[in-house]
Amino acid sequence: MQLTKTFTPEQFASALDSWAFLDLTGKEPVFTSLFGDVFLESADGWWYLDTLEGSLSLLWPTHEELLEALASDQGQDRYLMGALAVIADSRGLHLEENQVYGFMPPPVLGGTFAVENIQADDFAVTVNIMGQIHHQIRDLPPGTPITNIRLE
Image (cartoon, rainbow, N blue to C red; front, side, top):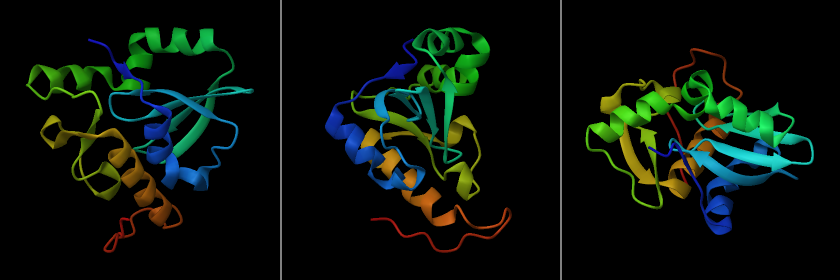
């Protein structure tokens, strides 16, 4: 099973529009995990946009180091959620060309990482919504009850 996907520049632009608060300047999206986490390339190396945690990290100085990390079982579990993707697929939740997996409700809003909470949705919509959520809650102290999220 292929654990990554690619999308068009237009799809990436739409998906990442709400993530500007993390400064994506100079970082070019190249591919994603099946859960919509985005791998971006820059002059500094390879960045990982974790859409569930709402974080952007420079993790690999070279393409070779990125490939090495994603080839390992540990890397596939951490960055691609490979085992969870395989389970979802084996339970009949197959992704269409423009879809990624998402959690409903998202873990950041109290959902769990249970397979029962996984659904297949449009990549651009899913990633954009997660960006909107993270932008709105990023300055809240841990444990703050979240009662009002606005989506555009």
